[in-house]
Length: 159
Length: 126
Image (cartoon, rainbow over all chains, first blue to last red; front, side, top):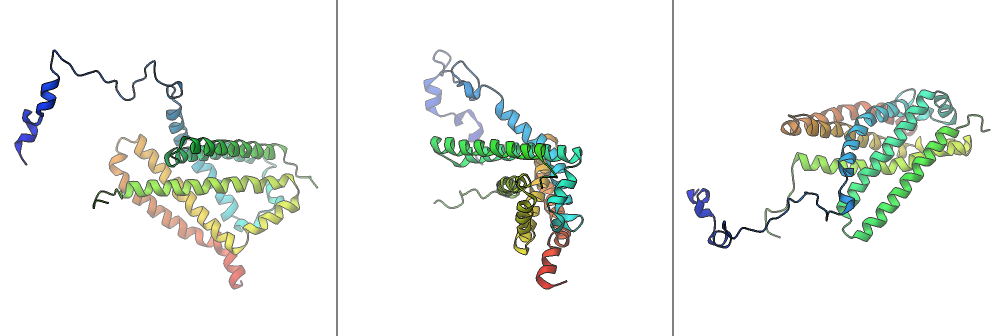
């Protein structure tokens, strides 16, 4: 390797000639610096909060979801035992109601934020992103509310 | 296309791809799962009828796939947290990925009988 690349000769004549002490280069803002011109939508810390939420909810979900899988698919005959009576037996306990409610909310929000990231990454047109995210948020709110309603209004003597 | 410029990544990129794919699949299942569970508010018969499809051999295979996706996403998610928050995480990310894959293989082997046993008995007799 040539020693030239580390010497001052690496600075080309153009850079050296145009700007000096009397003729300084124009000041360029740091890429992420927030100024008065920064759009309002990018001033908050929403993305960092979302990033942190993915990790915190992820840890809790590992326990909630793996416990749920163990009970539903592995113990006592696996999926064969599941039926209305089994659900009624479990939701008779506030512990499992809270477990399922927490799992519903965290999993839906974790998944919705994940899919939001995927949409932002792959949908290149602004309009496509708008519609896909509108659909995502609608489906997410609907599913969270439906699941919450089902847990709170469950009636073992429905018939 | 110029040769040798297409980024194909290594363990880091492929685990990221697998994390995305499994995450999206799990999320779509979650929608279906909340809807089928909501049938307990319709009638016990409606719920039991739909849950019966979950007990067929073909769907049992899908459940094994669901377990595979969830276990990978959970284990690799813990690895991502370690990479982000543990000072030595980035240095050991490859070793942690192969640890994840190793634990995943063991758990998937252990899940064969509990998840697919009933389907095997139905298909091949008890």
